[in-house]
Image (cartoon, rainbow over all chains, first blue to last red; front, side, top):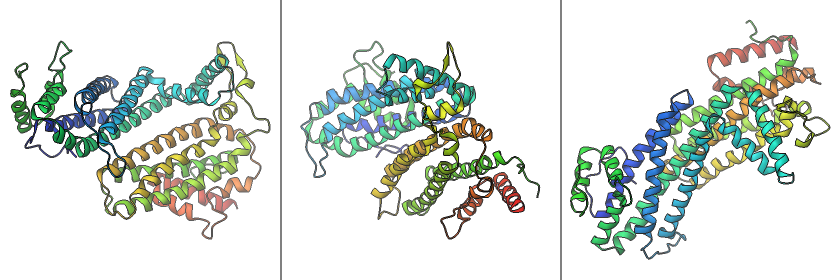
Length: 245
Length: 220
């Protein structure tokens, strides 16, 4: 698997740009986890939220583009253990979307996020009661719990759980990168022509539907070491797209 | 040695003992987590398993003891439901007892068991391997973090809702409350939990523990 601490020195084929991208995303997710850890002891949420939004935006685009231009066209195979790399890859993307969406929703709830989550779980567990009545009572229970625990504990609880969710997301992300590199990239190299690989890589690095088409590749450049940036520049020069800035 | 906690306040004695045991459990879990994250577990999976299994034994003891000592207090004969709670318009009058019953907080240790099992499942998949590969480490880290979060949430409830309730209740068995909470009456070595606490608590925690034990032995 791609390692943050080891420099990537060669790209054997265009799709190997994935190693550079994974490395950049891993560095960014480590930074976000670190901010979430600091937030538990009173650190700022503003920088954390900005990093989190960037992380989710990149991963969602990355997953969507892979589904369409990378695993979509592949003919899947089935390993002895039942693994089907292309379809499993898409399922892992769905899991990332679900977890990522969950974190975004949780952050939107603000400092009472954990309590709201606890009370929502309580409502779900009491299906037999009339819903409107239950929600009203649950809101009162949430208020009572808030009073009993006190503001500081409620905030601590929310941030603790946010940190947990972010680490869970990172673990799922790293597992996914590992699986993709081990099982999907060999399929891509075996089935796609050099031109197809090149176009797939370009799609992963440039957002043709955005006014700022370079938002992905510029982010990747910023996260990499100088030798790795040179590799990316060489690959970029082989695209017939906007020139590097 | 001067007692940190007054033994004349018999209602708080059980809470102090429970609190110290809780503190030892969270401290040891933190150590297990840190050693995993920092990769300073030289023995790999086996070493992790040993530390974690010891932690589980103490946690199960803690869970049994809180059920045994606290349940009679926090579980009244007539169980409440959400419908039974009285609410003034616009403001709540839910008591600690209502909250504990309604939110199922007295059974929170039960909710922790599946998280422990998840970690054991990860360990079971690694049987025979001596080194922790990064993927396994990540999964253990995730499991431990879920467990830590749940335990700390539980501690909040214990300290802010359950203990105040117990401190205003009358405990039936004074002797048990004074001396029995930290002792395993079913074990040959009744003080095995106390020994484990001595290895897990901070210096301040150990001082508090010794003070409590000293007070108990002088009062019995």
